[in-house]
Length: 256
Length: 264
Image (tube, rainbow over all chains, first blue to last red; front, side):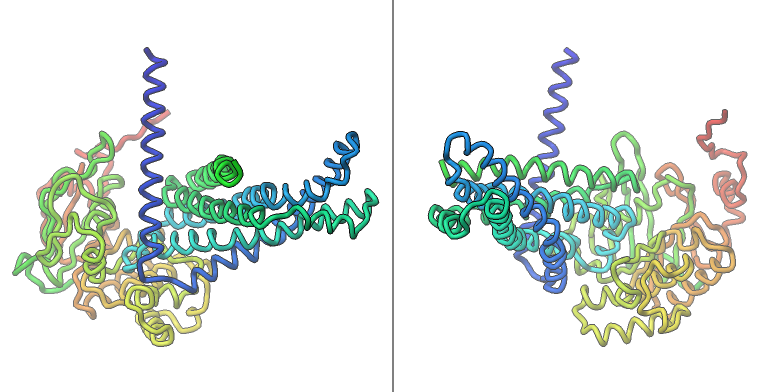
């Protein structure tokens, strides 16, 4: 009986949390399209999410591309299929690894920062102060972050795609001894528009999720420093899990 | 503080039977309050008696479970959206910890309501911010500092300048002297009296600093266990005849108010 009531209680908690998140999302989206708008804050967030994340996303993409080429070679050489490495690298990077790795890195860097910043504002009454100054916190804090996340992740992933493919190229040419011209031809030959576009569409979804979870957890944080810390952890963990789940769903949608 | 007679005409702020609970804990248990236009009302009471919850309920930051809240005779208990935005333009608030936006310099904090709330040009808002900073005794040299670079007393002054910058009709003060030394506390009290008088605003303050309460109020009320158990003119507080008020204003451990303290 205790076991069943435990399951029931956990289900109710889960449904309540889902409902709260759904309401928060709907409210946030409605404020994204209704004035007043804050273009200055949008640009500031775009710079923070996009430009400032370039080093970490670039390095991640570079080493991912390099490792991919190396691993593919050790596997494919057994079947005399090492000529397929260029294709494997470019498709893996553009379809999957570029958006997922960039999403996870930005979730750790930006999602955590958003949750910590808004969470600190919540526990120090700065969010309440916004309301008393006739400024809606959803318009001022949440909407610019959601828009910036959704717009900037595809830009980051486009850069990550290029750097990732370049990483694979460097390892293939300078370590594995491939012919540069043949490698580039092979890279371009099998790459289709849908491969890149699907990755960018995933990135937009991931950017939205990262910003949403950062804002949601920060906005509902309570209890001082410990509460802000918990909100930050929840923001990163929940965004990372949702990125992996949504990646599976979108892959099925684009390629099944 | 002023010579306003309470209960003349439509009250500026009126609470009727306001209740608010968090789970099983009743924080407000039927609060009735009426604050006249231009009056300075101070609510005293111990920690956890519901003072902040009451202020947040009036501001619409919390929604009461029952009862009615009126501002200028207009019921505001359940309004939202544009109607709430319109009512909020009447309010200014000094928060207990200042609640200054640490990502903005001092002048942008003071001018925030003018720029974001009223759409004023930044150059014009900056001039007004400097003027308001001067009104609370701060020079233009602090305008470009970050709030983190200010002392506690200076942060309170900046918070006060921000509260009065939009020339509000009603100003709330949440523990305005908490954490300040007695001299700085008195400076803040003087500034509150001056600012409220200059604006002709209605003030509602919550505090447990009796020196502050006596200095800035026309009337005082005491909140205990979610109810306003006594209210009257400031001059009458020493002869309230209420054992709870007597214990509180004299700061005695012995009396009807029992603090939950575990020893050993």
